Length: 409
Image (tube, rainbow, N blue to C red):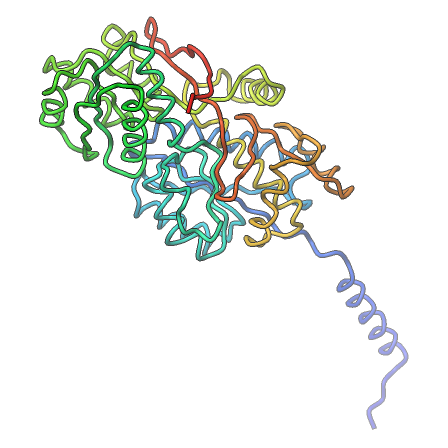
């Protein structure tokens, strides 16, 4: 017969108690991850680097306020290279390897659309773009997993037409990057400008990455256009502008939001671009939300660059984190179902930087309404938001805001 001493029994009982106690102890909070799909290289690198600072600021403020679900919010970066396939590959890694709960990005519509179609909508992960403005996105089959914190180009085209009319131009030529963003904005602009009695004598697509655009520019100038309406990004935009000036084809320019970058002035020269102007989705800067964001950004990074979509990148990050917090879990479907509840009325207003306040309100079972750095982030049934636009101009070698306005539809 096996003999068991009282000492052994006591040890076993104590050991069992310790195991039970360990199993009943609160589990350590699961790590919470958000992905960022940013063009850190390629045609939109100038914007990827600046937009990433907006994401970083939101992450840092959230973690300083206690994190999400009691855990530090982790940020995982994927470089889209401003190209569809690298963007898809980076998104797949964020979803399958990093197991992110949601993704901020991409910037280019030509990347966001294929990522949503082939990766995030089927994986059940929310993708929120802070910069993709193509009208195609509104009705994209994405299972309601694609949102954006920036207005559609259906509105920017109207704003751009209003700017061109106010500048006194009657006949302009449009040269646009051959992707969803470029085509969508070109079509929207032409429709709006024609409705005002203007003429778009040529509307031509260009392929990114070419060494020469002289053929496209010659055709654009062939029907007496007074100015070139250029819709594109900095890298190829610089080449197009330089060749337009070298050939004497255009001296007056109108720009889309994708070309609001100091790098263009540095490369071409202020004397050739002074007086050129453009539009960009832009919030009013005198609201409490904007002031909270601007003061925090300046304290962390210094002066805010004159580039778009930094504030919308911040907002996308903040509102996604709020959705995870309210959902109480990191599951992508749960985040998607809660998203409009934290961003749309009704509810007590939460402003940029007010993470601890938001968590307290949610813990008390109260509704919240996030009012962002870029304005209200009220998502409609398509995941779109409204907004205002900035009329910007190059003056004395600097990018300045002329006015912020709501386009007249």
